[in-house]
Picture 1 (cartoon, rainbow, N blue to C red):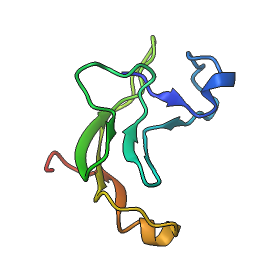
Picture 2 (tube, rainbow, N blue to C red; picture 1 turned 120 degrees about the horizontal axis):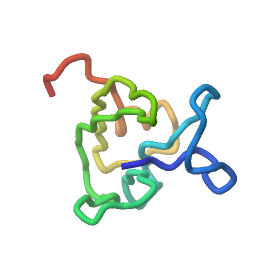
Picture 3 (tube, one colour; picture 1 turned 90 degrees about the vertical axis):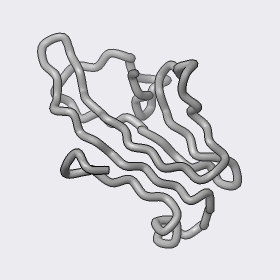
Picture 4 (cartoon, rainbow, N blue to C red; picture 1 turned 180 degrees about the vertical axis):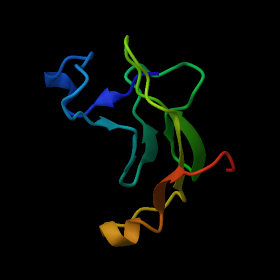
Length: 102
């Protein structure tokens, strides 16, 4: 499922390979929820969660000519919020998994 590009409202949905581009995978909204950022929310996945969340996502950049290797990312949120960035790192983590073990 495609992700939302950073600055999506002013950029085309399809991008040219080469220039740097960033997509937002997920976020935590203060005093509300954890949220995934697909371009089109699927009906079979809850994209907003108000409780602690742990998931492993497989991510791949795809194009007509080539695809990137698949990477696996573990996302964990304990349901808590803190205004400090350093303190928030104890509540919300995103890490790339080196192997197939979860």
